[in-house]
Image (cartoon, rainbow, N blue to C red; front, side, top):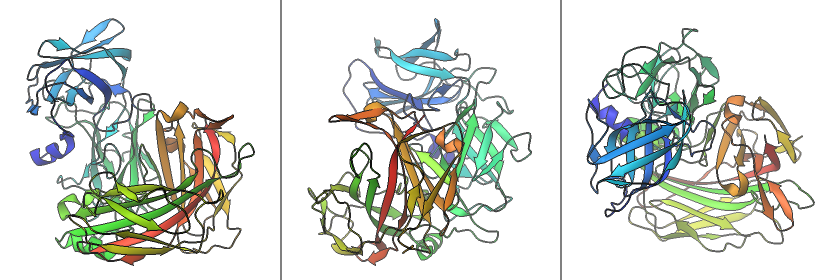
Length: 543
């Protein structure tokens, strides 16, 4: 594996430096999945690379280790204690707000504690859950989006460098399990554990012959590679891939797959011509505006109200190059499902400044404009009139006066009329340990007969402390879809939230269709589109 690709996998998220003080730990996560502690699959596997976030954890300038690693790096060391046994993780990168380290394979499994010592000052203990196996897939977006997958020549898989059915791909991650001989030096070659890799909807195992290898990357402590086969019949820019190891599912990433003889995929919202432009070596600047309505069915006498319901406007302005095409991530391809800690509709890079705010005009009263929440990402929650949500077949206008990268624009959207309506689900308990088949009808006649159907949902712990979302895409015209257990198992058990005299479950499921996009133009953009989606759904409890 090339050193350039290794840096892509292991590059830390660096933020501002801090002055020296006692270390303080804010979180401990798998370095690839970044799943929040307590979520299914968030345990740190023996021999895995993990990340400690916090403050005053190390020097003000980044410090990298080199093989053979040692138990101390630039004055930073760590201690993990489980069931009275202490081990000493191996730091590979240290900085004031982040540490990357390898958990020794000999660390006992179970619930324990971790401390960080820097310049002879030791943090208070923080919890850590150690497991025998728990895989995390590296992605560019904190554990979601394009999976870090290469071909056999270590070329990164993206929407302009696709894999094909019967090709071999290499999935990069960490957490397959313990190895012998220590974790500071080049690891032994050989398979670790018995993982199952889901490529699209196809399970692959070592015994099936579809997985060629699943173990440490030669020469790289803590880093795992899984050599898999792309199944026949798989196609799309955003085909999910996930790994079950140690009885738990990993985070979901996506891969781009196209028919033999082609090197680009065709179902991204940015458009085939923009993909071709990237493939030709040019950059693409893309603006994406989405109006979204979620109306949850009646619950304890309240119609379309309570947590989870509402109307919002989102916008991202993204610049892609052939080298950063893996950041062009929008939803999941037809026939598949994925889950994440984020809204899966848009995981693009969103770094083009279109101004401090964007105005919005339409039937709903907005409490303010779309506010820039960093880079080129904008959001506002819309207010409802007389308890109603986003009206159909009316015009909304989003406008910007321009910023450093994007000029002034006006984007108009005539909202669609909802067609798909979820049936048979309302205020009930749904299992996370079995497949779930959902059904819907088109009671008002399908106004978007050629558009896929999007099924979404989420589950949060008490008072929204932690949560996961999922998204599935069904073909246009379908009336049923089965959400696989591998997706549902990544959700936490639903908690509750008090709202006045009522208590709501914090599980949701919804269904909708995207409107046909309308384009808009602005200086600095190769294309801009605005669309809308109406989701109708229900409160549920995922148990």
